[in-house]
Length: 127
Image 1 (tube, rainbow, N blue to C red):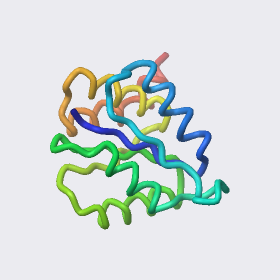
Image 2 (tube, helix red, strand yellow):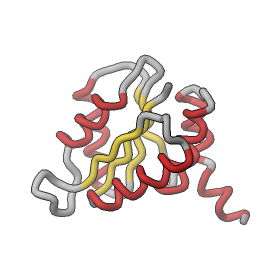
Image 3 (cartoon, helix red, strand yellow):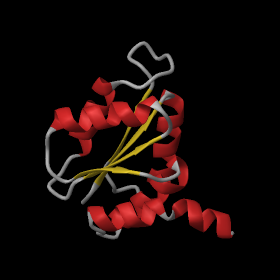
Image 4 (cartoon, rainbow, N blue to C red):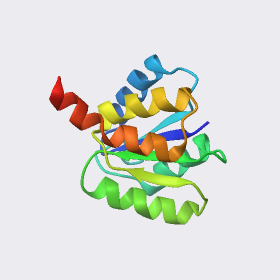
């Protein structure tokens, strides 16, 4: 099953997004990587690497981020992790995480999850 990493500048935001996604798909491996090691705002390569390690499988990992430097930090972490089947998914964080978790729970591939999660913002605008 594809794993999911939720990376954010805020520990509480990342954990909240994971909590919501797990309500929809409790069996999906999903991990939060939010804030810095001292619990202040920022993005931590170490935390993102730890989350990737926690949820990694041969099916891959979808990495979802909030804004700015978290994207760059996630890219660096992915390079350092150096495993196949890693995707940085461009999507709204909350909606994308929920969609990604539901799709992963249904056995979708990493590419299918990336596609569906990236559409999550468009779906929201139509409602």
